[in-house]
Image (cartoon, rainbow, N blue to C red; front, side):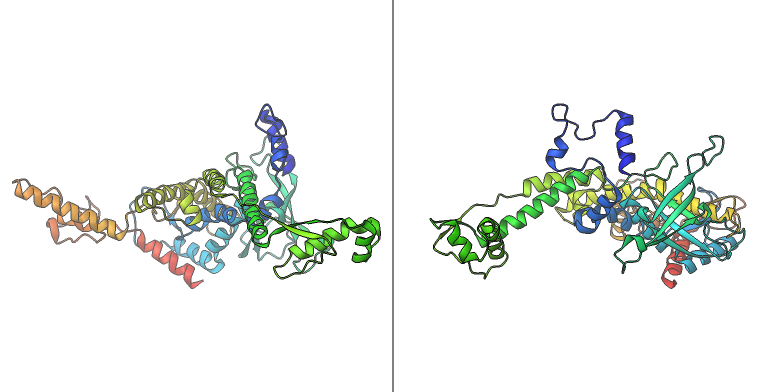
Length: 458
């Protein structure tokens, strides 16, 4: 991946170590790496709380509720009943815990450029062979980018798969064996792989790591946090300077080392003294003087880095770190955040799920269906309290109309539905469902409730 980053910089004519024309190696001076690899991202994700939040917040909110698959096209009249195809698909999703596996692969993909589901089928074939049509899907295992590497590619530009991997290699890691040479690996046919690559609008497997744009700011946060903690420790423990007129050979005798090892022995003694609060310092005729210093307040520098990282992952800082500032600010941040996640559901995760289902259809694992779509509940919908407040306002408008001699602006059913309740056919002279339409419009929440029930049962 480091090679890929360097190639991209060369392709667009960007400098590799700085955006500052006067200081071509500024990033090196700041301690920023020239090229980022999966190891950089994974280490940051596992050891930095803000980096972890930058990866996980989007996934946790996206999968706050489960989607469900609907036969038909978006915009069709909603139904309360399930079709036989929907029931069969829901059973497969439940038995494989597919939503849980997809959400696990989702956050793994945000750590690197892509992640994958390794699909295991009951076809008694080696993993490097195509799937036997009609084979039952047994499991779906989420993999990190570093666990699955392309080995060969489709190189015929006349085919739709041009530029896509024609074979992968899975690295089987043994966490109890520290020797990488003992890890096994084997090749996997693309039939058995489903890729998740957020940001890969060119349909390649290489997306954009969530931590890439804000990586430098995450390093700044680590420096501020680490130096602040070390600074407070040293301020509390105290730093010492030794002074005196002791001859080198006397120090060597006192420390029990050769004369040319005195400096090293003194450093070891000082390091041992600084490692605990209750250690003693052997002076040997020298004087120890305390060096005092004050630790600067790092908040201003931390906030700049944190805000830059929050911007890089399109997440409001209060949502990122779980901070409540004020009610109005929090509500506005939450509304924007919910819109961001709804966009992610529609533009990325929904199409990815559709791609997985169509892949399983091509393999004959599930029956083919020409028209279907992924449905999510709307995170931007008003809460129960907001719905009741809106219904109350509608009632007040009707009352003001009556006092002015005007007709009501809203019917009773309008207010019931705004308040989150079902319409009552006995009101307003009955509901009009349209000509030759015997079925009332249905709330898709019934399908959502069934999907969530299947997930809980799994």
